[in-house]
Length: 221
Image (cartoon, rainbow, N blue to C red; front, side):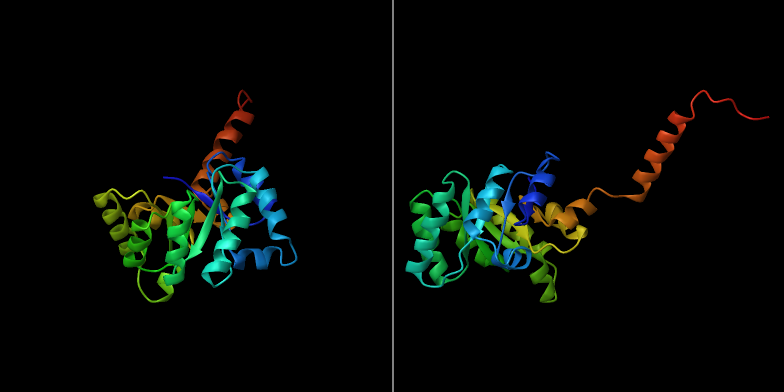
């Protein structure tokens, strides 16, 4: 299992990779539009590549097969060993996925809401299949059974795809994804930092530090 950071901010990426617990980056057009609407995408991704390691997912935003393939070639050229093309799931997306897989390009099939979708993408050879936890929950049901079912069928059939769980909105979603069998929760910086915190941990550290600072001091009568 692994953790990816879901961000397009190079400084955040650098800061959180310094923990040594993160092993990849996912970005999407919505994140980039919010964090840096005027940024040049190529420059932004190259900055992220410099301060991280592992796969960096970049999403296609065009809609025809020819446009998506041209866009894929542009992104892939930024770092052929590390760039992972995020392919939106659709009939056209499946055709693009198949072509990219045949060329040896890493792929991340995104916007998945159901096991049958993830299964199709895995059969086609996707490097990653991305299930959107928060958006599944918006539909009124838990994503955990979808993650569990997808992991079972991937393991049973010996498929190589790894399950990414994204659209994580709460720390509980990370725990749920890991318990359900996700290979890679991808987590925003605020939620990653919440994973550090527990009130009892802080209280215990203060207790230990205070005891050490006061060692050897004479006690009053």
